[in-house]
Length: 124
Image 1 (cartoon, rainbow, N blue to C red):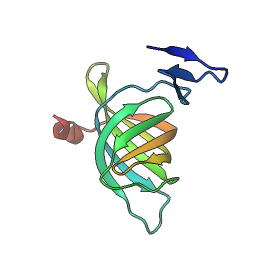
Image 2: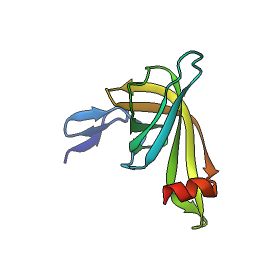
Image 3: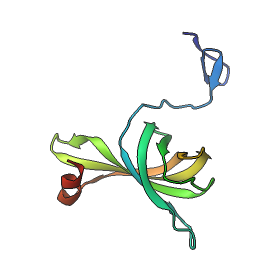
Image 4: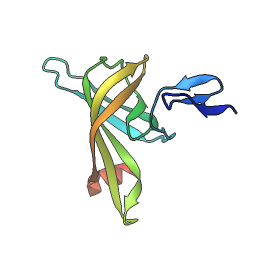
């Protein structure tokens, strides 16, 4: 495999440039999403993450999400706090790419929350 960097520090893989400055990981978990800052537009749904990184998340959607809108995504995190407590990754960011039933969101802020026992029972 051809892997090098150009002067802008973008990885060159197989002759193609990957413009992301951060790595993505192939994490597949359930995701729930909702468009925020939309008074008349009530868009929400569920899907599956395709990949995640510190700068963004790519996931499947039930319908095409509006480009440029702020979205909140919630992902059931695969690791547990202290090996016991279930976690949820909650992020807010802008839709930067949409392709039919997939959307890419650039993460602007995020937090980890503990999941309630009701959510935990539904996830088992």
